[in-house]
Image 1 (tube, rainbow, N blue to C red):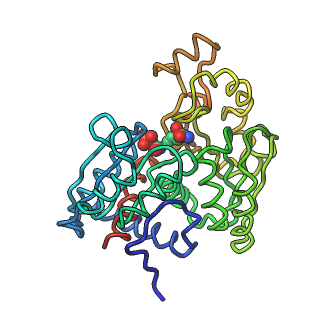
Image 2: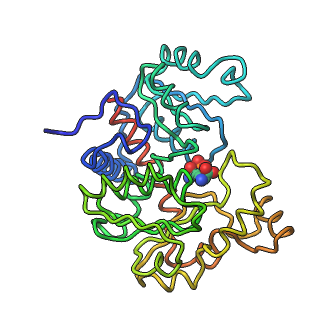
Length: 330
Ligand code: CP
Ligand code: NVA
């Protein structure tokens, strides 16, 4: 039987089967091919989507906007500063209103419960554009980028270095477990994924043949790795006062030339972005002034080096998000 996710929300990959994830990845490849060939694909003309952002974004917002327009849809962007959302109207009431006007809703913000509620109350497909717990659309772009490099990813090793219980790391563990990719979380014991999520992923891994490794040992994390992945050390919504303690904990887990050398020579570097790889940002410069760090989670040489694929990954956000919207709205 063919895969059908029409009418479904996309809130966490825990709700999606390996076959459904595979279907979305294949669809994204087809959309990428069409986009690069200049073939129009306005398959959803007449539909309307709304994008709700309670946190800032460059990639996710642009990916949803461009993808929606490529599919022929209308797009409305809302944030707390320019709408009633959150301040004067609950998310549940907002959802009920938006569900009357739009065919689909994207949400970026805080707790996972919010995006789940939006889906419950709006009655239309809701797509998670990042919550504190998960970042599922990012995963499709990440795996697509890996497959473009290596083909079949089953049995290969992807290691996440850093804050291994953040939204990106959590979602990587889920997608790898589902797809048979060996996942290693490499970071300090204090920042490991929650036991409950690890257990759920271990269940999925049993079925797919993936291994899940949690380690604080950098060599163990890097050795044999095909993909070295990192993310910023302090996520959106976390208080700036945490920088100092986070830097102390995560400094040893920076992805630098030495760590890259421990991995397979064919390994690639991925980062969901944005990244503090130099002092060319306000925060990057502030951190340098305060703590003397030229770079945080990844050094500039790795970021600009021949193994880096983060800009292919960023482009792939658009093709994969297009696949998710199309598959759930068609
Ligand atoms: N990777 C990612 O989600 O980027 P933005 O925060 O710019 O959307
Ligand atoms: N962990 C990061 C991801 C940004 C795309 C954050 O939540 O800020």
